[in-house]
Image 1: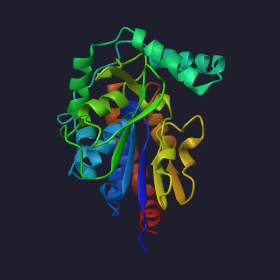
Image 2: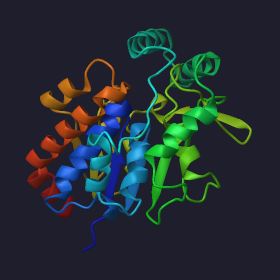
Image 3: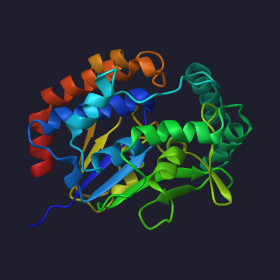
Amino acid sequence: MTVARALVLGGGGIAGIAWETGVLAGAAEAGLDPAQADFIVGTSAGAAVAAQVTSGHPPGYWLERQVDPALQNAEMSPPGMSVAVLWETLARMMEESAEPVELRLRIAAMALAADTVDEPARRVVVAGRLAGDTWPRQHMVIVAVDAYSGERHLFDAGSGVGLIDAVAASSAVPGVWPPVTIGSTRYVDGGVYSLTNADLAVGFDRVLVLAPIPDLDGQDGQTDGGETMVVSPDEESVAAFGADPLDPSVMAPSARAGLAQGRRSAGELVDFWRA
């Protein structure tokens, strides 16, 4: 009997990209190949990792680009709202807005009004994280939120949008990075809808969720049917993230912590994936 597998990669900033890369590299040493997933969902940081694991390069290749200073991407330090202020702002908005669409629209309005870097400069950074602008052969969706409607939007190989722009849209952290213009619409971070968007993996027999930041709405395990394994940072990984997951200096420590966690849990991960 064929087992349908989905890989869900959640948001978590630069630390999240590094940690997810490390976990997958550690599991790959024991035989888990994330590129063999039948369906991949990438949100924010997870969008970059989704593009990386389907690029044809093995997880170890991307791990080296996280831990070797000579290979690391030229990341920006956030010039706009600090992460501490962002969390405070989002927490206040959540208290004041009971309706999900209203909340997303308020967050998007804040993002549209924020003074950040220009879109082309940010796009260069995102492009540097990827192997190119071509969508992979695997069935993969990248999640963003329409800043004008507040609705979730899914980019895939048939959307007519390049992979770089899709990943940039998915990782446009509100108030920190600029919303991404695609056609007549602007998009903000897919994590504004859900930090994992694990509900998109409905119908799959095995759903592996990497959640650098556990979803506030508890959606991580909501995949309806099948079996779901949610992997979140352990104590050492949380410590490696530090206070600011968008700080480029956390890249190597978070990747190494993820690698160690992936190696420790490799047997369990491989058994789940192959069952």
